[in-house]
Length: 113
View: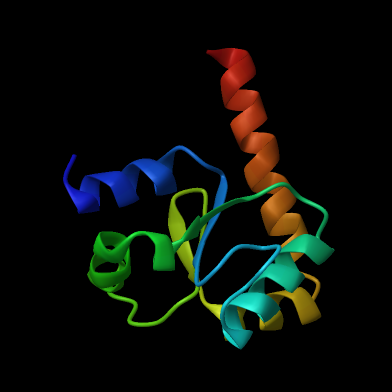
């Protein structure tokens, strides 16, 4: 499967996905670490992709959504941004409701299909 198709599949089939350096348990950069902490503080399950484990994704993800840096957080198939934006949304109290709504929408879709 083409790398952009693999990225698209991951983004579209998960309500919340973070493309990061490392894993939530062992982040490999400070930006990924802080972004994951914000997601975890919301108490919502999310999917992650360790871009260091997949050189193709590491090289091609920046052009997928025209966003040059890592991490990249997608909610309901849309890029919400990276670390700074996630932290800003968290501090404003907007991140948790956004994530909860994404999970709820996915569960509703599964029930209705």
